[in-house]
Image 1 (cartoon, helix red, strand yellow):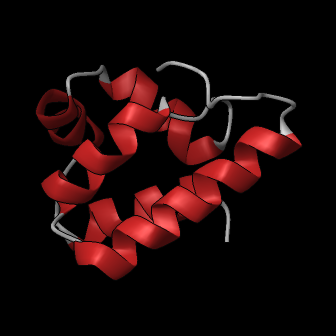
Image 2 (cartoon, one colour):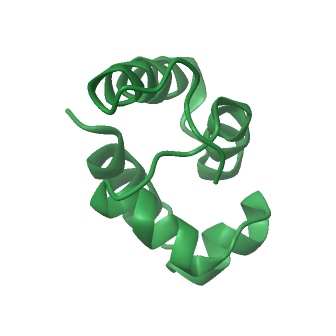
Length: 83
């Protein structure tokens, strides 16, 4: 599953708007939208913050981390790009 799909799924389960999630993570709602649509991917340092805010636990964090790595490789990034 792609990272954006996971972020959106977890955000909706947490009943958060893109704006609310962005505020909690320290990015704009536009950045959340870009992550969810796969236009960009979050910086790897933000993945742990996303997991904490979304309260998805270790399995959810591991899924986000794997998806971030796969998306970074598929987009040609060595390290996931910044938000």
